[in-house]
Image (cartoon, rainbow, N blue to C red; front, side, top):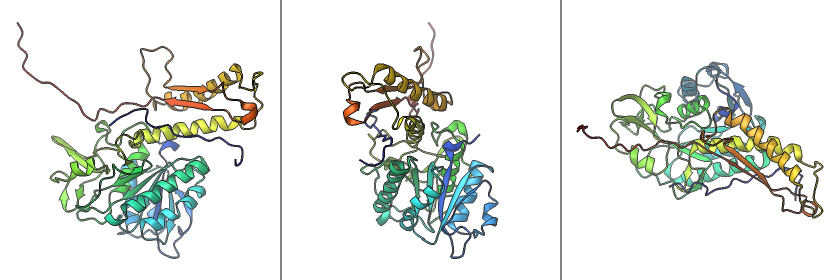
Length: 376
């Protein structure tokens, strides 16, 4: 059975849908040279001065990603770095658990920055390795993460919608033409400065802090592959007619359209709820709990746990605007917690808890009927 602890599973299928806080802490695992001060070491930095401090060479993918991260997130954003001699994504991902443990679970989003983006023939294996890493640290460290991977553009990139990697985002498009990598640093910077419930492509937040954006050799403004990449589940930049600058088209993760956690924003919301729920429930491990004559949890004990967990999630999330509420419904907190009072706790030594949180909707498509007004 393992050590007494709290186990939290992510329920799926509910939707049926076709100032920086710890919530936005990003980690980057980067390629460095032998002898680097970052080699096999996790460090926390707050400014782009780290490029000089750690002698990260200009012209490398690591230098570019960190520089673009701070251009988007702003100086002062917390960033964890880990250096490895591995040059490809698979080698860096293999050291991910060591990095995340060294960061003590602080990292919420892990950006993998190899010397070049992943190629067509390794997309599935690299995404699977990233998903496995994310699931492992979630279940063993109770510190869920999302992994971002840079993809080298090719006109034969496969669709991601048949995959099941709902903790992995694949980024296509870069700030320079004919790039062998992607604007993963820009994406990481945008994530670092927005709340968990905010979509990375929200237009109200303004355009990305980049002068240009390309897919292959073409500027995004004239590229005819943006929609195809979006449809296939990649995170890709786009333009809006009549609006200057570049924006992310969507926040898709590498999984089916029907997956509740396909959206990066919803993934981040549920991951925060996971962390808050774990912190609240772990206090009850090996606690004395009142039971009925049948060995089930008493109503009073169940209600106490429900109120404790709901209060923690409300204060950490609803009050912070991370969860949606219906203002027309009195007492709607955006979260509901139910503790099972039918399970024989005396025999099983287990209590069952159901936690449901209410996310926001996102106006991805706005339908308008426009016509002339003629008054009688």
